[in-house]
Length: 138
Image (cartoon, rainbow, N blue to C red):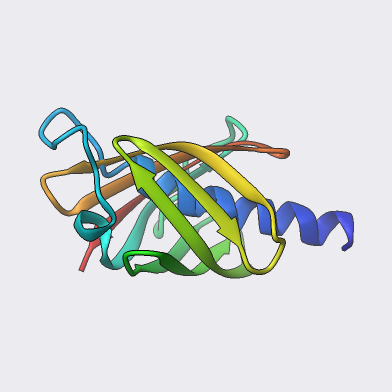
């Protein structure tokens, strides 16, 4: 796998993790379950490696969606014009989130939170650095 493809895949995986971490806040139970996270989400924000926070209206922009079942995720993410689709499996226990990409076969672990039952935040550490995402349930 080329270095640029690995970086894009790491960003995609990180985005998934970011989504999960954004969903858990003080207004939500600290014991997240896959059933609580299941649903369709649209990206609100994306940040990788301490870079700028990107949104659908920022320049450069980050847009995307993620669909979570109780065991799988399907991600469609575009960051600064580069599309990064990904899918795989995930687990959540409390605020600990873990995902394994079908594309890269890599596993990343981080944190997830759910605010007001509809805003999911995920942050995972990848070889490319920390990736944080926030998604809104549709």
